[in-house]
Length: 431
Image (cartoon, rainbow, N blue to C red; front, side, top):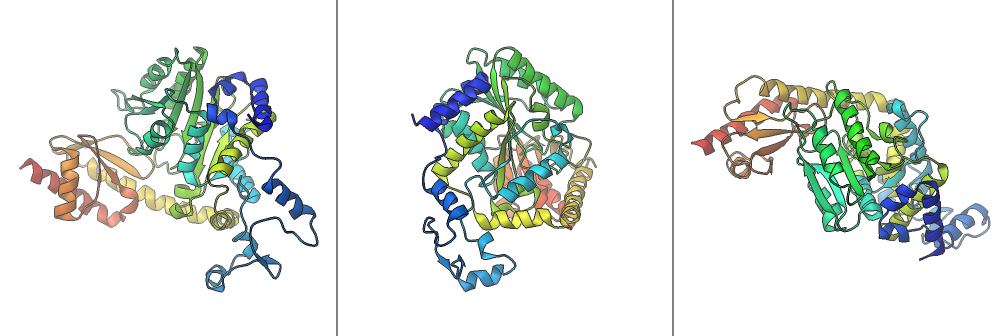
């Protein structure tokens, strides 16, 4: 084992031995090189005032070499903010701006100890880092039965973890905190669990309310009190798109400093929040009790980034940073939020009208991009194919009964036609 990895392990074990026990064998081997090309290049950048012959980029006339055909389309930005490598942890100004944004949006983070956000190549990369750092073969990854399919690839296929499912909704169609608690406590013999909390939920568009959130916290605490080390991951991909009376914060704030056996990890990003899906800019943030502990977790994270993608794309980080600094940012974002809210409300009004009740029900939704129909008489996959082939309508089939609808990409004036076609398609199959 590299001495730097050993040093980081000793720090984590000293600061919180439970956190150390959660780290995978790969995670224990990880470190960020202190002495190497990157560190020597950084030192040269600060001190080499005559010639800097360290970094693997080309320079011309005192700035990064570039093609005019590209720069002409990006002329609002300086070449240094586009073409150089971004640091493995991300552009420092962007990290600071995202932390500031987190504090503004999460009053629960006040007086809590958490790391500076580290830039990832969007949220999937952030979850992959969590998997590499903490998941071992056989570890339990606890998610609801209605979930994003990529979790299985990320945690089970790549790292050999065991997926453990519980029903998302209880008999009252609220978040099933009892099911979560049972799934956690079932891991007592293993002594470890990775719990992924995804709100607004993909695929259902559901976010719990304050009372439900308290019961989630109690479920996690019960597991910790039972001696189970819990990596509590908040997948906040659709954060801020809360249209009704639900939580308006990530659970990350409530999880920070909650219990020595609970390691909070926040995975979020500009991808959906700022409507920049192709920019691939996300963040990973850790909660912990000390600066030394958080620094060690950050160094291990940088080791994974360095050994996989090296660093994220610089141009998109610059674009996001400039947007966050803009005086019109909040106004423009609110305008888009209102459009999304109107679409969600239009869907709900239609579904509550009763005109489709003979064919489907629907799962509660109050946030995000999606909602799910629960079909009463036809197979979801059969309906999906029929809608595609006969009506040119695309939907997502999930299991035998559930059909996911992304109202996020449908103009408000087209929503009624969309659901009418889905309804007609279901009647076709029933006939």
